[in-house]
Image 1: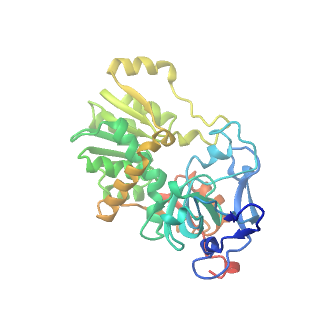
Image 2 (image 1 turned 90 degrees about the horizontal axis):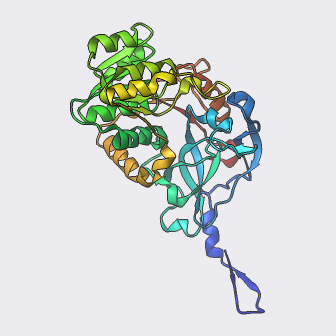
Image 3 (image 1 turned 30 degrees about the vertical axis):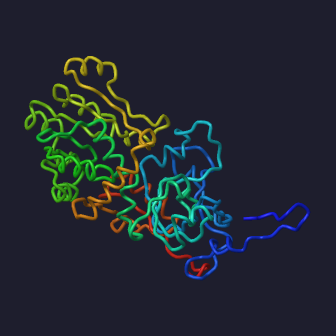
Length: 377
């Protein structure tokens, strides 16, 4: 911050501003850092993304925080972002990663009105796959501590909460089908539907996942590798399901449409089965879809979190409250069972994305970023 004296006088540097750029444990913030950068548009994460090791650490502006990331979240749509599907005008290179949690290590003067150096914050903004990220103070979320459980709520939790709140019309006794139910966002859809006193059915791919689903209140887990989902739904739910929380796409989407009850609602959260394809889509039986919806007075609704930011803060507060009270499980998968072990360091983001697409994770996939030796932290 620079203040000018009377005309003709020399500039006076306001040194009170400098204290906001001190690292919170007294050691210098390094000049350079590592981060992941999209250098080529592709849904193949390994081809699209490069780990750069000598990037300058960014400086926060007046209303910004500089956050040293401790944990970053992996999302199925990371490869949509690396393929340029969200912003067709984006030209590489550009930063990647949607969400992170860490400590404030520097901040601008205006931001210091609400935040302090050393404070734990979570955030959702592009560029989290980095050792340090500049975050506007206006969108940062104060959290009690740097725990990966808080990270699970930022995208996965709020997506489930807002989509079911705004589009699901949940009420006691309704039957809710959640696909990919043991995944990052599915776990929240299951629990929020249970809290709403609905009967919850969840699809998954292993007995371990089915056991996890039972532990968080799922009434009828279906391991589709051992039970045909379509058969189970026809035999056990002949009247259909009232709400579908659909994340998979392709054949699962078609199956879910067929399983809708009269006046049922299918919410499209995503279609992970198609993200790795050149188009990003999974083929569905779209030709007969209008007739099927009409026959049942059913509806198909899409949900994209960016369109609901006006309600985002309230959703986060509700999720944080549920977690604090012990009414919400935020399952984190740090890769303990992955082929190369726990996901630690930015280089392991590649392995974490691969692991997600094997469908073996339980809960939200998270990568831990250890302290940098060079910064003595």
